Image (tube, rainbow, N blue to C red; front, side, top):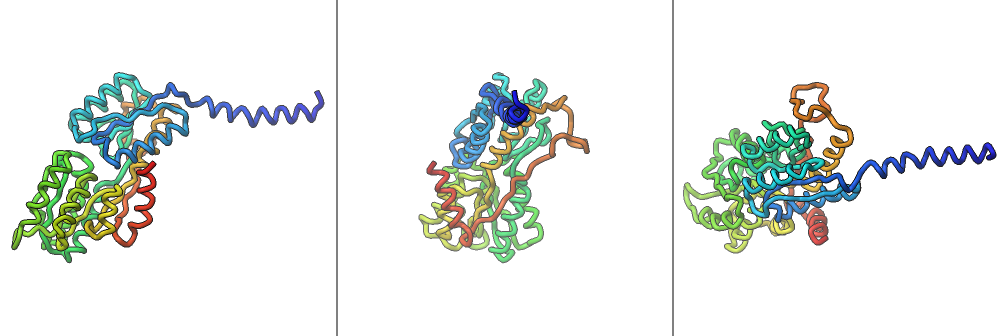
Length: 331
């Protein structure tokens, strides 16, 4: 074989081998699961799309599990079923930290990597958290409400008490309001994961008058904002402030119409995408022991959390986002 031919051949091998190795790194036998609750919501469909996009890119198997309604115990039951399948890794949004923490710890003890997303269980042995800095999200909304009320008014919150991310948002709002003595939190309503309950409660708030008048309603989770907004629209109520969470098309249309003053946008697609990538990294470059407390370790292989960011959406910037979200939801 001539020398130049050998040089070309070895060069091709040098280029081709890394490509082939990259192709064989992943396998369909690698099974990654996302576990959440209320999975029928557009928010979770968006998160699932990011998770599945990364899975398709890597050529691994992905599955999204969890109850279609808000049901923390049902989520725990689904998580246990997933652990029994001995998956490659689990990405989980925690509806109840109290219920989910022992389940996460058991999975980690069994050598199954678990990363939390959207809603955390920081007291568990999960590797780390990917999602919104929810205290910051609450503070962003709190400053908006305070500005729109000129520092004075009665505020009610609609939430699912006990859900870690929502509790952090509520604390963020209250932290801001502590600087405004004229703003009073007059109710924190437990919607029990049912936006229809929030819709039924809204007329009662709108009927209050005088010193008991509700000047602002804040929806701390995704689904209730649109339903409460529809009540304001149907009753032609224009003197109450409504601030919501997330960017489903129905919510954004009400922002565009001025029914919802503003909504806090998160990045669920990014959470799902980064979540699978993170689990893949742990699988292919394992860290042992998984159960070690890396929180205080300055040489930890993991961050404490990855903040995917928030932004405020109102009539001034809703149009391009509405077009983008509508296109995604129609896919």
